[in-house]
Image (cartoon, rainbow, N blue to C red; front, side, top):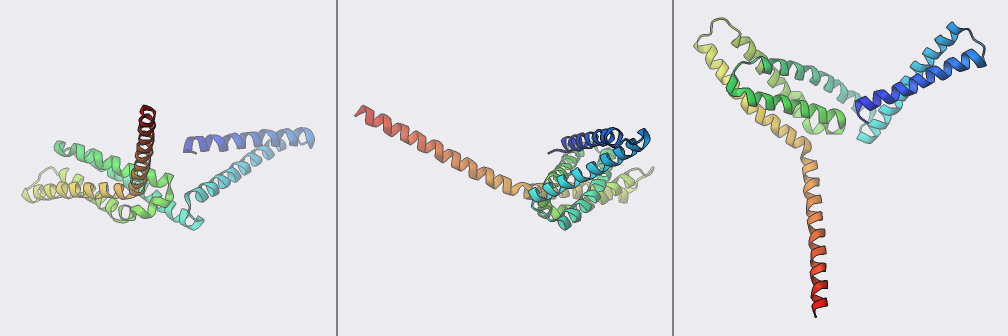
Length: 218
């Protein structure tokens, strides 16, 4: 269940719990309007918390991670989200036109890795190099580049540093591309397996059809 549907479902549960609690308190237990309203709000909050916990437990079970692992992964994802925001801000601020496409690719890949891992926490361990090393390097290099390029006067040393930073970022982009590939490598292997199975099935059906037609001609 995606985030929007999850929020809608929990909202639906809590709103219904709020209404039912108010009706029961006001009519069945003859409470005052104010007291019934207080009970209903409390009931809605409790039901929202309960439904959130149940959905989280189901998500962890489906993802194949323990509560401890889930908490650990979520903490690292929260840090990664802030770093990706800083990276995107820095990369967009760079005014070097020839490297525009490479920077856009880097932005897309970092977001994709984050998105995949958030939806499937178990994959976090396949991309630990990205979260603990490569992302940090990308942020540091990008922000340092923006700082140096914003200087009102740039000497030869600064220009060389900028050129070296662009080249390093380009190489780092290729490394992060490999991170993304490692993250989805199992899916690619599974896809290739399914394709082979489908091809063999079609070939067998074709062979059977040819044999049937040959027998009819005889």
